[in-house]
Length: 621
Ligand code: ARG
Image (cartoon, rainbow, N blue to C red):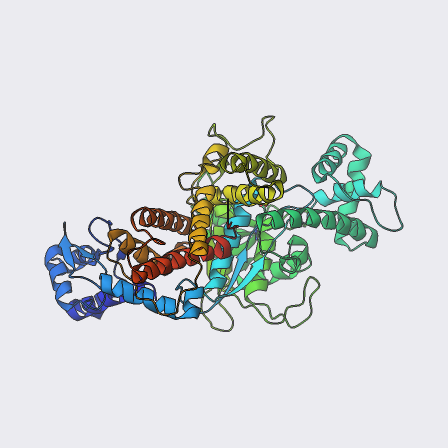
């Protein structure tokens, strides 16, 4: 259990004893202002509203029942009724000693396994194929990947899904364009430049009516499974996959080919899903209810109906700008299905379907029956996901068929990346920034930084370092931001050696490693941890708070908490290192204790940076 959870539990017991268990669930315990406390409990303030008594009085009552003497100093009441808690130094050093002695716990940085294991689908990256990945895919890819890594780290069964856009009418023109290659035998040539291939096809589609008509036919051919259309479509898809693999490898994204289930995978399921949905939600054949709903402004209960030829779901709570009920369209008048239909089918597949039959993409060895599904896409899709989630809730498709519990559906939305001018990030000529070019530039710029910092590094080593520094800087600059906000992309800021940046963290880590290398000897399993200086205490406490941070990240799906934590840990380490000689410590015991703290700090950074954020650490910079 994390320290925060442990304290929450103790406070909950005290509140239960003082006022009754109905008041005891989930008392507010959070990190305190470091000047006064390690943690603060605000429960008395919330209780005062419920109980109609002064918060300071309630706080005093809580303290009478609070049993934390084993781990904390005497708690104090501050301000209007906060309870401030400081961990005792003896408890901290005992905890650190235990961590060192338990090699399995140490290898996990003290992070506990979850006690409520569940199957979590993380739907991320999801680029649209036949186009190059651009900067808009950066956040979706890396946020989703970090969330997946952390869930897996604490012991959840994680199913990564790459919901690529690989189907739809635009493939007609792409296939038609490919048809001109007139290569009916053997390998098709490679698409060296996906974007210009797409642009050429779009250009012809616009200007050449004959081409456009044939492109429409190609869509029909593709949907009816025509072998030639399929062959050309597969070629386009293969070329796109090659491109995505390259980007994923550069970014160290853990998605594999087996995780790809794109729109095409669900395409043949759509008619059935629409039928099941119409059956599950009251189907209004003659459209009378929609007229009623349009008049009334309100939909009180979800239903499916035909509206102007299209099949629509109407849901309570969604209105357009004229305050009229806003439908979720699941089939257009011409019979075509939409993005939302595919997402409904994907949810059905992830939650309900028994996967006993081998499927085309990759055989599954077990049923998922997801307990939780997380999507990382940008905030502009918030309404799409809200409506899709509400639709399946209305149809009761969100009930896990095994546990009978509702599936947790979460859209981990994110803001935009802006240029330094505060406008959407574009190239000088106003085009979207291609991810590959962005990452190449990052490595080049990092090389300049590395050359300045360490001119003696041999060229081959410098190239490796530049790659690690450049890519990490871009990823870290993104991950350290609260995902819900926009941020400005700035090369100078992200590559700075000071501040909350990738290079600074990598540099601090390299320094820790160098100290440990110089010390030479391996630490014995049992070391008495001495926290007699404020810097040692601060570093030790931060190390033990790693588990708090992981819990918080998973609670809010916000990886930037982990970044802030690691930055602060590096700060604690730096002041420790400045004030507490390690290799030249006064006694062998203190030397050993300080080496142990350094090792644990390095361990936690290694897990956070490398295993969870998927970034590269360097022994030397
Ligand atoms: N291809 C979509 C896009 O580029 C993202 C897919 C996200 N996942 C999903 N299940 N809708 O916007």
